[in-house]
Image 1 (tube, rainbow, N blue to C red):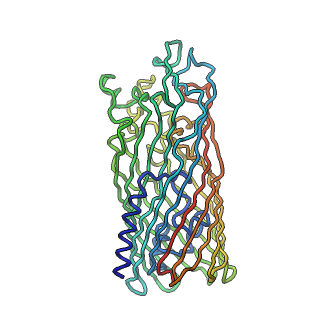
Image 2 (cartoon, rainbow, N blue to C red):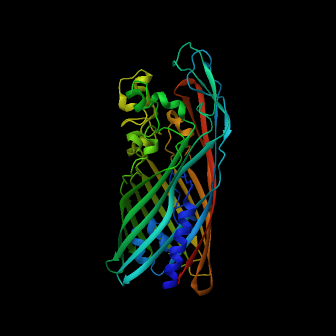
Image 3 (spheres, rainbow, N blue to C red):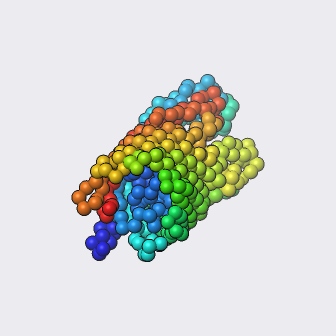
Length: 457
């Protein structure tokens, strides 16, 4: 047991190091699943916990997977690009015209780790700890140009600047690391429950958005005398938050199980170094999230899982506020100071809530090789009216397919592998500053994850 504890501490330290700079925008800005086996079925299998990291999906899993130490890491490759059409008004009436540009994001490889262990306290109770990366988004747009009309629409002198938004290389680097502390119990043989204290650390960096300075609350409130200092290029900032998670698992029959999980909205500390960019003076809370799952075992060697997941992105101002709020800012002719960037009603990414449907199939249960296949679909959260700001975070993925397997090793240990492909998707819409110009953002993804379990028997 002492050696297992030392190994867990070592793996946690490695995981914390690897989590830096990760990005995982695939269902919105969350991963499609958590744990190698779960990812092998495209995130399905909530009601079929098979490893300790399953407690990250449902706290009740901790009491069903005791004595296991799981660790793994994914190589995640999101391929993102954007392009803009020529403006029909550029040089006469265009304002904040982007390009025309056609650019691929420069950073495409990220590591997403996980590690988890569950301890048995009694025949009916257990505790567990899990560390994992689940959310994030990243982009880096080198090159391109923007044509800025400082007086807004109408005949005026114009100037062309380098970079997507005229402020040089543009992009964001946002990642989340979760640490779950779980207590779980059983009520009879057919019902398990669990509660989790969720601690989250977020990191964020933005660059290349200095030209938005005239539209920030602090700059407007100062009478345009004090340029914003917390808008862009301030390096990585950090925020910490604590929330909760509750889950249940029950056997409806010998061959059918049901599970449900709800995670509260997590109030995070502000990104003070970017208080002039995000709504609520740098607020970036984590939205509430809920899952339900049903698993049916038609034979002793096969299982079919159906899952539904819903995330309330629109409840978080920095994520859900529409970009059109910015046009209520006094510097753009409006009358509401709080609608400027950084204000309580400041412009955000304009994301809708997102519901994702997942189906997974597993075969070979009980043998030395178990195989998995899964698909998922969810309507991506970005409306066509919101594409301009979402150049920074083009989370437009809707469909995934995944495959995975587990090989039993010596002493009951297990090696698992999952491979995921997210199909190319794109969203296009008008530039709100220059409606004669069309902006298109698109992305596709690959991910390969390898996980290992000790004490798997």
